[in-house]
Image (cartoon, rainbow, N blue to C red):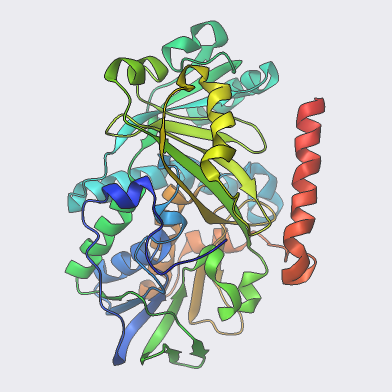
Length: 431
């Protein structure tokens, strides 16, 4: 995948409300905390720390929201992205309950941040989880029961296949689970709005300032091409783009390419016929499809997952058959935007959050495995709590979940995982 220092030519970049740049670092600074990474993790950690009165410098190698934070499908969905019950032997039943609740509360945290700082980001409530098979639809009842046990207040309802036309104009699905406590938004506007809020609270933000070297010690020193930052604590929020900056962490996250297209603006009648209630939608396939309408009535459709590091030569041509399988009625509709981005995937599909044992003043959060829009806000809160207060019980729960290093080293881990994903897709096809 090729990288530039400016935002990719996405629908989000073209419609961002305020993409005014920040300066690059030139000189030496000191701070209580230095945050590396200008995505949702880094920006929200900086904002949380500033709200607690700490001095913060944020260094971004390219632009705020340049990576997955500003390129994703914009689906604000409850959950952490994994059946967390499987982690009971590591975190206990109380820990499992905490993680399930965090998957819900993280969505509320995003909503409260949008409201508090008046961030215009096209937030719309309503999400439908789509079953590809009858067995998946049957499992939605268990999911609904789990939510009820957590005293989940937003409306949820099961929608059978013969009623699903009320939600989506496609015959591809065996039913759905509607959740009015999840929704969709413009992610680049969100992260840039949060950066403005952090800047307004005194966070010093620098773009085009990649960190070249870290000197560890009681105070951490970070070197860029034209400056340095000394800080008591360091937060690494680089996710799929950590690379060699911290090899002890980068091997536990696999960068995987995900791809999105956005159509031309659709006539109101066509848009409302495709997704009558303007919900976000996502299916259950291994290489899932996710889609929604934008504020200007485009269909934004994403999916696929590549581990080779190489984008398809023509993303629109690659994605169009996926769009038409769901919506054949769009055969003559033009695709205006096409883009890809790297998401960070962990071996257990659960975010890796904690601090380095060798350097306890270095904190990190990464590997959201497709659930970053909400969970980044929660992990940022935990990191800020731990730094400002000296301890965070929530951080202890997250960091108790073990994470494997992907086998094969940097050269082989992507091909090995691609083979593994092919096996899961074959199982899916063969039933």
